[in-house]
Length: 398
Image 1: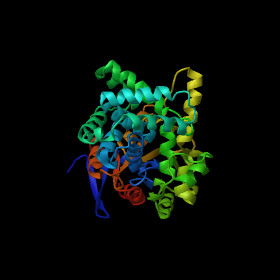
Image 2: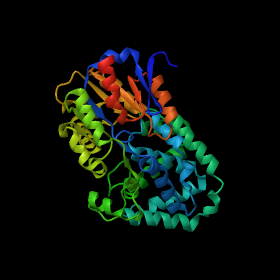
Image 3: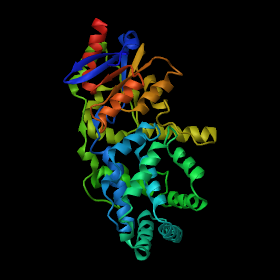
Image 4: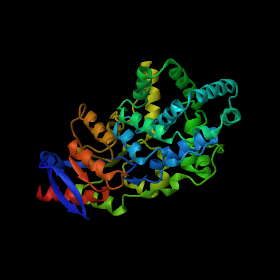
């Protein structure tokens, strides 16, 4: 047993209170939530989207069958643990870039030639089809059948060497360890996927959102007809974690409703799943990916250099907190080490934040629990629904 924590059993699973944090936890009168893995169970949506988009893109391009489990959930966890891949578009881009860079040199030459020949085509779908048809004419898909182990190893190595800089860490490794030919090829990959970029601009982002949203929601959200995918959207697999009663109990425990959300998820996708539950949060304290991207654009124009405000940058947490009523201490509830990093960075500017890690709805929950213990999270609990009772125990009994 970790002697730095008080352990309490709740619903057959452990909750952990850091002894040195108890006095500060007593003072909590505001709660800010991450969304994915905290308010919404994303194990069959976002956690599956990276591997499904990669498999879809590679099969379409090469004609070879790429299994979805080529990118394991454990490997996705390693990427997330690094702190640099809160944005799933970034993660999917690096996964695709890793795979394409690992394919045989003659494939890379064919790919490079076909991308250059298609550059005059501005429409995403026609450009994609041009590259796809060219590759399939010149390349035997059977030649890729025996590469699974090498690709899995390459993806895992990329995950292990990733850090909080995200894509930058991948690019630095390519510059350090890759050949000049490979570095030139990566530039072509980036051009082909037109990343970074929004829906309708970037091939990767567009395909990702079509697969995640499904045709109807994609059209409603982006005002565009789907061009690549017409199956069921992965978002339909999502389940709401937080129960309406949890927010009511928190109001009673804290003596007020002082709740915010600081998330890297798009606002409309959150509204689509949580629906009227969002009414229980302060509208001024809701920060989503849309808000972060807008702030990045404004800061980039002002500073003259590219600015990244996504997690583990504390921007979303600090901005959410400013929308709350005055508070003594705010508890940020997250499901990843990246969220713990956000609190650490926020406390450099405003030392009133505490971190609660939840682990039940993770694909690798034992690893997540152990990581939170090692990081000395202030509070660790199975899910957000145990939070009111745990705070009440702290406030009443210490």
